[in-house]
Every structure is written in C-alpha cells, then in structure tokens.
Image 1: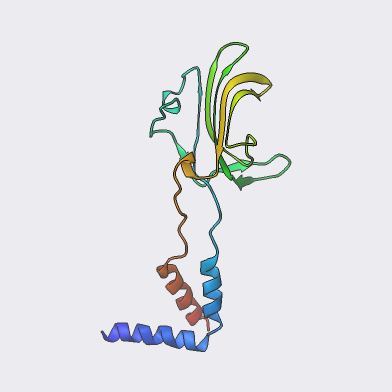
Image 2 (image 1 turned 30 degrees about the vertical axis):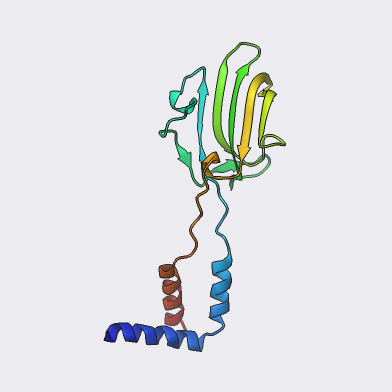
Length: 160
C-alpha cells in the first residue's frame, strides 16, 4: 500500500505543479489518430486467385494502414477508400476481380454497375467503393491508453 500511496502522491504532485498540462492532455486525447483504412488486397484474372473471387476467402491479405502513391508526389499516403472491381472484358471475355485501397473514390456513387473502363479496356460489371475497414466492418482505431498517459507524465516529471 505504501508504494501505491507514494505513486498517487507523486502523480498529484506533478499535476499540482503543472496544471497547464491537464488541458493539454485532454486536447491530445480528443484527437483521433491518423485516419487509415484497412482493405483487402488481391487480383484475380480468369479465376487465377481463387481466394479473391466471390465468395472471398479469409486468406486474402489485409493491408492496414493501406497506403498508396499519388501521381506527381513522392512517398506513400494513407488511403481513404477500399474498392472492389469485378467485371468481364468486352473485347476478349476475360474476367477480373480487384480488391484494393485507393486515394480517390472510383465512382460518383458507392456502387456503380454497368460499363466501365480500366486500363483502356471496356468492362461490364460493378465498381464498389467504401470508406470503412474491409468494406463491411468498422473497427475503431485505438486512442492513447492510460499506460501511455502515465509514461508521458512520468517523463515530464523527470525533466521538470
């Protein structure tokens, strides 16, 4: 009990001497972490990747955070969308399933079915875009936990 009481006294002492820190910590805790999205990522042409086809297998890799390059920029940036493209090439009849993350919405609506162009080829099928993890499940990102907060306060106390 004595050690716990000493820790509490230490904590209160730090807070009393540094009252400006409390609002600062509250502001930090109110911020959301970087908004990244988790997306399945796979390509299947003519059934070449069975796990990617519908119904999709749980073995398809998930990328979190999903990052993409941006034209005329260096480096990778956090993607904001997950997309699924499924179609049949109108020229040769080949089928295509793509699951990926993207920086931009691939259609003006969440799901577009009909004709679409991809790599200068015309396809018939659907393009679906969403803003949630795995296109169907929302998983909240963790915020700063109590242990991180205590470590921060302890370090602050050491250098005060």
